[in-house]
Amino acid sequence: MVATVTSLGRSGLHDWIIQRLSAVIMLAYTLYLTYFVISTGDVTAAAWQALFATTFMKVFSLLALGSIVMHAWIGLWIVSTDYMPKLAIRMAFQAFVIIMCLALMIWGIQILWSI
Image (cartoon, rainbow, N blue to C red; front, side):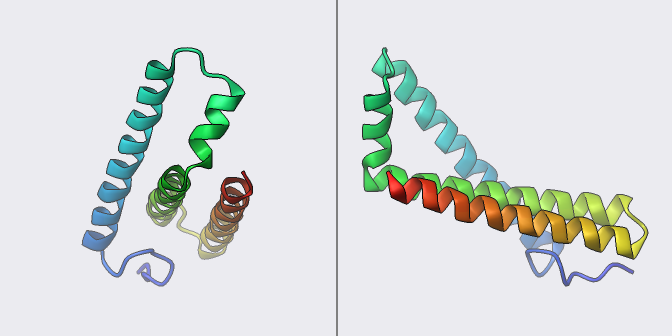
């Protein structure tokens, strides 16, 4: 029996809702960036920097980054619990994914708020 100690949510329904909400946020972020690229015409470094200098874009980017991390963690947790029957391998994999997700979140925050 697989314990839900390492899952993000408290139940499968909770994880499902988090994945759906994170997917909607990632879609909105992608559409917004696509709109920016299409409407700007010539995307220069100055235009890109001006876009990411706004507080709205920093917060939206952090929300998208958090959504990516949560979405990835839930998906990889489900894959590891389904396809890695050996506890030691599964725990090592999950620890690696947690470390990577935390590192990417910290790195993203550092990049976004240093602009």
